Length: 297
Image (cartoon, rainbow, N blue to C red):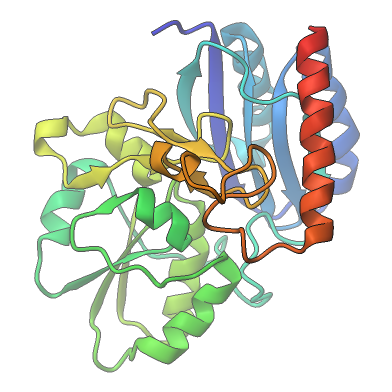
């Protein structure tokens, strides 16, 4: 596969009291180097996925790591033949990943980090409850063998799932995983605060696991949903077999696209009954504009 562009996914939970003043500096730095994607800044840290040439991404990482607070920033790289983002956005947020629990501070305490090479042994332990902290539509694309899905539509629903379904007095060991590691940081911090005795988390998330573990040794089943135009990646981190509905942002299969409910950019079998006629009219106009813009290129 061509490696013309480097996609870097990164996060770091650390107190950034000056995050607002960092925004214009990072925006101009990325724009000057044709780095595209989205970076979130908050007082609790930094999170985002960006793409650029090898040289541009290296410059960005050097800039961030020159700040002592970000010297240990977590990041993972993959590659693309074309740029999967079209704009550069540096956003200011209350949280870099929204759990809706302001007292949860991953910079103070999180679960025990388990490296990919030790992950299989951990989740094969019958005393360990393995939980996927991602959304249900992500879980349906692929998951670890025997993982439990909280059946959530967004991460803010995770605390309710814990309250309604899990008892810290009955569950001694919990293992959490997510795409890149960031949701596990908050989820593990939350579960420890709720009294769970031992909480583990997959360090670097699914993407690091797929990068380091050979497929014949892997306990991963299916593909991994990613939040860019690739939609999903396979075990070699190459672009997967899913497309995306641009109305609801869910992953869709070839079979979904053959259904009557599927209209490109407007609806799919998952959202046809969720959207109003007015919303679908808006999506239809947006798709018309996208088609016109593509034809002009």
